[in-house]
Amino acid sequence: MSLQTVTLHLPEKLYEQIRRSALSKNRSVEDELVGTVEAVWMDDDTAVLPDDLAEEITQLALLDDEHLWRAARMKVAPEKTERVQTLIAKQRAEGLIETEEEEVRQLQHFAHRVMLIRAEAAVQLKRKV
Image (cartoon, rainbow, N blue to C red; front, side, top):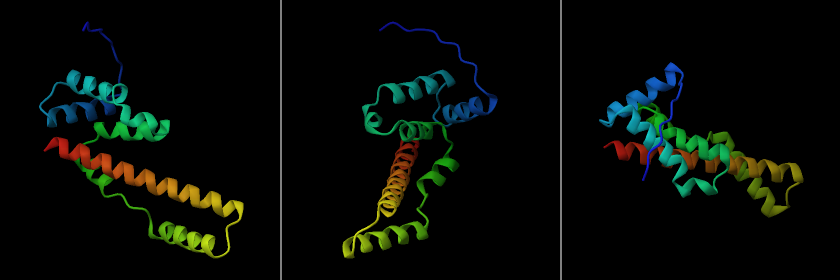
């Protein structure tokens, strides 16, 4: 396989995140960037996700341990969970109006997003061990 050279101009803050991530894995910055690019472009797992969520998931690879732990511990606010439960109970009992159906979809989408981010953060932390 032939290799291509690419020159990137990165903001210092982003470069430092990548450098720290590479250092924690005993890798060069170049190897870290190649790994990140491969994860984005060669991983079909994110192909079925909405673009914004796929991007968020792949960005987790650039986080340090502290931020990965924060992501892994994310929770849906109790009031959102309670609201979904209330709406689902109402749906079973009498049905929902269109705005309530949309609210349920949005709340469920948010809960799924949190679950996926938590799972991927846990995978990233496991890889570092």
